[in-house]
Image (cartoon, rainbow, N blue to C red; front, side, top):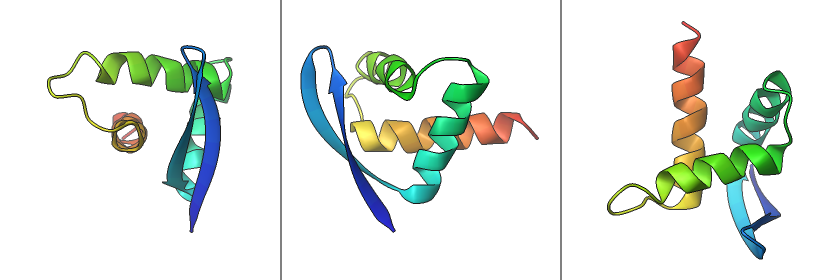
Length: 73
């Protein structure tokens, strides 16, 4: 099921809709890294904006989660 959350990036509020499983994975990664979920999302957001053209934030979050899970194998 999709879950919409509001987050603040660079001082601006935005909403992101992701499947619950992705939110759970991202929260877990943030915990593993000993940082907050907003900090992790901010890092992913900055990285995606360097791409041309930049992907949407939700897509960037999904790809990050998938790549991080793949790296565990």
